[in-house]
Amino acid sequence: MELRQLGNTGLKLSSVGFGASPLGNVFGTVSDEQAIASVRLAFQSGINFFDTSPYYGGTLSEKVLGKALKALGVPRNEYFVSTKCGRYKEEGFDFSADRVTRSVEESLERLQLDYVDILQCHDIEFGSLDQIVNETLPALQKLKEAGKTRFIGITGLPLGIFTYVLDRVPPGTVDVILSYCHYCINDSTLEDIIPYLKSKGVGIINASPLAMGLLTESGPPEWHPASPELKSACQAAANHCKEKGKNISKLAMQYSLLNKEITTVLVGMKSVEQVEENVAATRELAASGIDEEALSEVEAILKPVKNQSWPSGIQQS
Ligand code: NAD
Image (tube, rainbow, N blue to C red; front, side, top):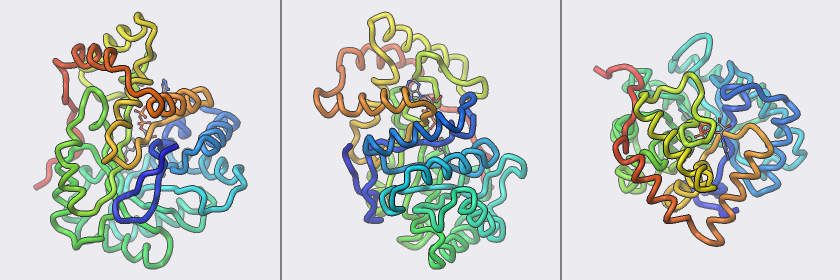
């Protein structure tokens, strides 16, 4: 598995990261045994980056990931873990210094770890971005100094949140951004801010290469926020691939991996089979490149909905 530098952090992450939201039963029920086997196979296949949040499954994802990482029985410095703060299933959003400081302690306990590699403010468009700049990030800085996290990140959907925050904090305050659903076959708008992020030395995590299930044969979960038009275009693209004996998820993984400016492509996985498929897609890409014909056919089907997103967050004043 290829390793790529994460901005200025010095971390070398595998080009595919393990998204652990499915371990919180976000995409259907996953047994502990299945979760542990999936994490083990991912690690054995060269995946060294695991991402979770207290929000996923109301803390379940963190607990299950912690169990699975412990079961690996390997030294702590052989894998990297990111979790998040500020978004909770029961409480909603709270980016106050007090809450995020307690949050990391709770996460570490659930993960059975002494520190995380990255602590990210989760979906900041739902809070006040000025609070993130003036209160949350300084609190995270203290947690970094205390050794609870090695690096600090921010996550969310609208790309403007990243430039808003990064324009207002001293260099080195935010080490990493996590963007989702903006670098997959149907939406590549993350590309527009890559030069800006690189100029700031910020590492780039691209989550949801399968557009949270839109680019899969079985389709997205019930809660997926895409418009009916976007859902049906993706369904048509998946069907087209299937009819030609091809798999849309493989193509989607490979599409996201092609951009080497992105450090890691974070895909949610809930079974050994999915780990096998995504690792195989990565190896095949390295060996023989992407299926250009299938990609251009899928791009043509998705053209009417290209870069269509959905609203997320509160209006900033
Ligand atoms: P995704 O695009 O990675 O899709 C995940 C879905 O695809 C799941 O249903 C999974 O079971 C399925 N899948 C995985 N591999 C497959 C394959 N080979 N064939 C068919 N189906 C397959 O979306 P995601 O899980 O939402 O995103 C990945 C990760 O990124 C999350 O788990 C989370 O860790 C992170 N993330 C973070 C944020 C945020 O911070 N705001 C938002 C989205 C995602």
